[in-house]
Image (cartoon, rainbow, N blue to C red; front, side, top):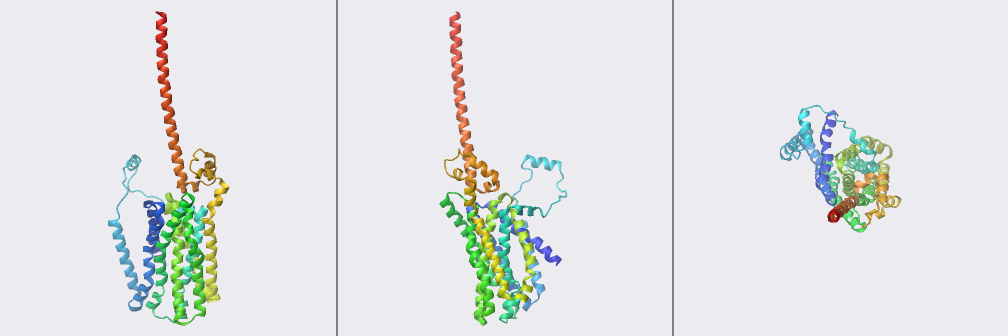
Amino acid sequence: MFWRFFQSAGAAPGMALGASVIGDIYKSEERGTALGVFFGATLLGPALAPFVGGFTMHYFSWRVVQFGLAVFSLIGFIFMLFAFTETSHPGTLKADSLELNSRPLWRPVLVNPLAPLGLLRSPPLLVLTMVGLVTLLTDYVLLVPLAYTIGIRYNIRNEALLGACYLPSGLGNIVGAPVAGGLSDRVMKRWRLKRGLLLPEDRLRACLIGASVLVPLSILLSGLSMRYVPGPIGLVLNLVCLFMNGFGVDMVLSPSAAYIVDILQTRSAEAMAANNGLRALLLSLAVAGILPMINTYGVVVTNLISASLAWVGFAFILSEAQAYPYLKKILGVDKVLKKGSLGETKPFTNFSVFHDNLITRLKALSQIQLDFDKKCKEAEAKYVDKLNEIRKQLDVRWKQIDKFESSVKS
């Protein structure tokens, strides 16, 4: 158990930091696609792992699986060590030079690993974490007891064949992640053209089909097929439901991750870490109750409860995606969002006081502010030029007066 914890602690940072790096190097309109490709590539491992692990355990030994994981991890470390370009240059800033001169290069640093969890006080981040929890829980309800549900129901005893039953879910993840990411970018662009404003909340509209249809219906149909449809037809239906669930889960998680990076771009790594950390913690507790619930209430009831939770998550994500129009009416920011309204500063002030985090997400408002500052500077420069011209005219007048006085005296 300790080594499992140790392994997870080493593997988890890659997801949070990877999403953060993508948020740094891609602009908002391309971020969803990039994150989708990233998640699709990382989910290749979970897709192949059950089949490869089952095949290896059946024909060789479970120790070979662990040895292979160690070798691949070492290869990944070597690639990161030698192929990843160092982008930081200590000492290039004067402040860095002073710090390097005043402090030793090697010194103990205390880091609070739980500090990013403070970001969960943000309602949008907490809501999306809970939505991701109930969405991913459907995946676990299908996959964790698969050997005791599909394996026993359809008499699959071979570990390799049983591992192959996990492939549809993994393939759904691989296909769903880039599709969902690209769809979220297109949805956001379309709503930007429709509204004239780029909003991160529009990205969540790409989650609605997966959250309302694919995720809950796949697990519900899987439970019904497992209970009432025997033989090869029932097995095929369950495999289709596994693919449907894997596709739907990433239809929710990929746009949600891109949205989190959008709204907290300066702290995207911490936000993703908080999101993944709390979700993993709650999932680890929920997974422990899956098999006892199946043994007590049956597969259909267990899957129905999980589907109901997924529909609750859909309601939350729908409210998050639709929240901005109501906030817009309450806060009265229409004048700020329209072109030519740079002089209307009062709504902008009320808006920033009430929801300053949202301002950082509205790039259009930021552009308006920059244009306003630019116009102020231009106006200031114009008035300075006029003042200088008036001073020159006054100097000329004073010289004429002095000349006239001297002529009168003479």
